[in-house]
Amino acid sequence: MNLLRTKSVEQSIKDTEEPGHRLRRDLSALDLVVFGIGVIVGTGIFVLTGQVAKEKAGPAVAISFILAAVVCALAALCYAEFASTVPVAGSAYTFSYATLGEFPAWIIGWDLILELALGAAVVSVGWSGYFASLLDSAGVHLPAAITNPPGSSGGVVNVPAIALVLVVTGLLVLGVKISSRVNAVVVVVKVSVVLLVIVAGLFFVKGENYHPFIPPSEPNPSVKGAAAPLMQVIFGITPVSYGWLGIFAAIAIVFFAYIGFDIVATAAEEARRPQRDLPIGLIGSLVITALLYAAVSTVVAGMQNYKKLSDAAPLADAFKAVGHSAFATVIDVGAVIGLIAVVLILLLGQSRVFFAMSRDGLLPPWLSAIHPRFGTPWLSTVIMGGVVAVLAGFIPLAKLAELVNIGTLFAFLLVSVGVLILRRTRPDLPRAFRTPLVPVIPILSVLGCLFVMINLPLETWYRFLAWMVVGSIIYFGYGRHHSRVGIAAASGRS
Image (tube, rainbow, N blue to C red):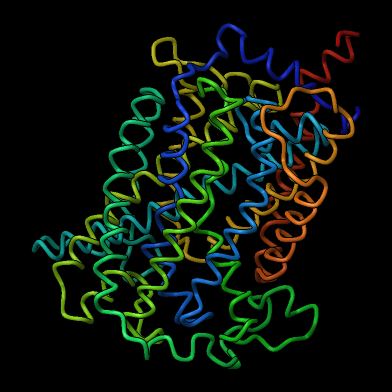
């Protein structure tokens, strides 16, 4: 069977109108921008800023955030062209099916399942920590047995993380419009908190905390073997902290802050005017959040010496360090509320990829069943919500953020390649948005993604390849035999 057979753009769009597989178009351009902001403003601001400044980049952490945003922006321009041309659920999976072929599309879909499911689980665990901290402040102390997963300081099961995933899954089943309204409220709260940090924090910035802005490189003996970045392994470079090598290594970590902006593209079938709304949602949300990240990281690094920043709650602890605990409490509340939106949108995107793959026959058809009342892919949503709840409740996920990153970067890379291919194979397709400066922008996007990927640890590559092997086994065991495109070709139908 032909592993590179493609599903035409016209057929992809036609499938969206099938009875029983039709999603409701309830989302406006503003909804999509808010979705993007909702998923991006989260772990990156509330957690990663301190860890990355302390261990990798120093006060120059803002440079790492900006460079990571540039890589995302290049990919976003490619996503915008695809999403406006092929307004179908599934994001990079659907785009790859139309350009690279069925097996590459399967691989990217399988990759997206990993990215979004693990991302939701990681954020759920982070939310649980903030939630437990808030309860502690209020005098309610939850035992470690029900707030930590097995293998970590007396943990048995992370009950708050499981509860969050299950509640969010229920919201998604009820309908995308309800989910978008909840997300809008949450986004207003957490963006307000971020702006509070920026404005209030400016009054406590000390110039000496920025010197040196790019600290000189220091050997980092704690990073060795397979934990070292692939680039440093290839070239035999001793792992270091700080300096430009530290800034580059930090990009690979802070990239986690931007995962999920591509989820805007997974909601293509639920946008009212996808050809116009999707480019606005993708690019608008990325620009806004990149500015917020750069501003917050610069202010926090100026409030407290980078070596003293907190790993778990850098924004709140920076205000505690300058004697303003009230601000810290507000930030903790904002983090608890804000991370809910991140989990919601990651699960939304994950269920839509599952839905698209099932509708194409690469996964069992019952996974793409649409709820008769709510118009959502409820079975795939419930199943993946259950899987994520188990991951969040029982598995320590601290090291898996890097695995999420490599999956995202791989998706970006394939979408950028796909734009070049579709421009050559289907120049006649109507494109409401065209990626500028083709082929320069797609090529730069590919190179940027590869650069960040080789700055990820070697062990991350091992895990990623293992996941791809498992996916290949499932495809050759089930997907290729049940592919609707393959069955149609075999029967002589186009």
